[in-house]
Length: 207
Image (cartoon, rainbow, N blue to C red; front, side, top):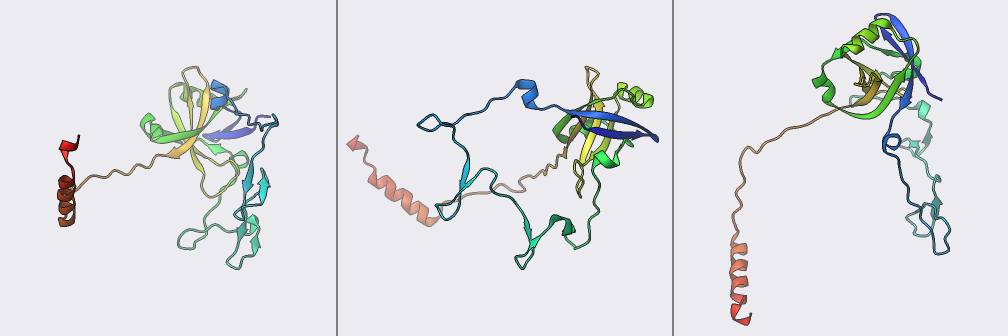
C-alpha cells in the first residue's frame, strides 16, 4: 500500500501518496539461479574466520556495544558531534510533513545526485501549488524516511508528462585540485648503473 506524505505551502496542507519508481519497473530485472551438481538450488552462506562454521543467509545482524563490551540498545544511544554536543534529531517525514518553503533554480537542483524517485499522486492538491509547479518552479525540502539526524535534500517538480515528482538525493561535493608544480623524475645513480648493466647483457647478435 502506498504511503502518504503531507506537504505544506503557505499554511495550506495537502496529502500525496508516493509511488516509488526504480530501474526494475522501467527496464525489468533478471536474476541468476545457482544450482549444484544434482540440480538443487544453492543458498548463500558465510564462512566464519574459524574456517569451518557456516552461517546461513539472514543469520547475522549488527549491534552496538560500549567500551566495556556490553550490549547497548539503539534507543539508549545519543548522537553527538565531534565536540560531544548532542545532535538534534528530526522525526520521520511521514509524521512531521514536508514544508515547501524554498524555491531553487535548475542549476542548484543539478548540483545534487538523485538516488530515490517517487511519483506523487493526489486527488486534492493545493491550487497555488499546481499553478507554481506548472510554471516550472522547483521546491526544495528535506526528507527522512524513519527520522534521524541527517535528513536528505528533496525536490518537488513537474515533468514534461505532467507527472509531479519527489526526487531525493545528496549534494555533490566535488573538490578541485591542480598541480602547483610539475614533478621532475631524475634517475638515481643506482638506476643508471642498472640501466648500463642491462644494456651490456643484451646481445642483438643472438637474435
